[in-house]
Image (cartoon, rainbow, N blue to C red; front, side):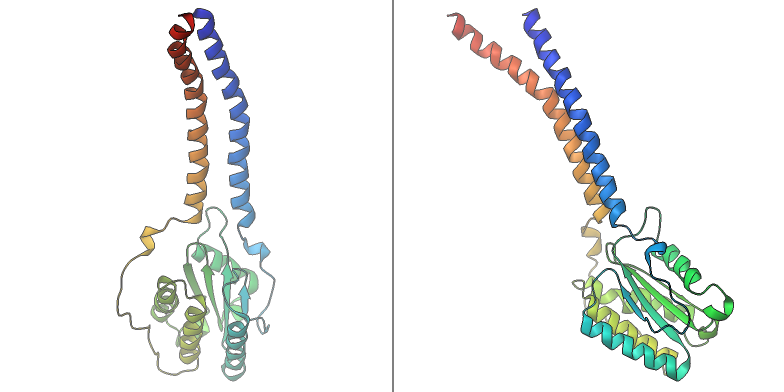
Length: 245
């Protein structure tokens, strides 16, 4: 019996030694995959004031037709008023980054001087969390006040996203409102929400899902490493009397 127990515990030790490297690989792969999908400011193409690149859709959520329509609208706005608007979508933020910090860093990268910033507006969307941020220069704030800008990001853009991730509608609505305001027209305001049901809390973020899957693997493998040797031992005890008889 003592010899059998020694064999059981030896088997458990061997299993743990085999499983731990596998767990390390799984966790490392999960973390690497998350980092590889993240977008940093350094990955966004450079541009300067006056550049005609109005939409950078790295999140790939805007159709080519709508991207062309939005770009044409923003191009006309820039020619008529001198006010420039740019939309940026990304798939995932770097660890510790927020839409606001990302937008601020990108705004500084593209428009490093007060003069370059003056008539600029930048709207950023992270497609994993649907988090938004908007930044504008001092010259346009007389038209695009902070209150209106916040409403554009948190209401006009976000409302269609809460209603089934309707990205094309969201950016078309946001572009229409921004163009109206920056052209000196009355603010059309946010969309009217008929049924304001909060559903975003029922979905996990991708990062949480990734970590949850990795944790499940770890727990499952550790349980297996403990149960399999013990189950072998109890099966042995169960069949031993019959074999002796």
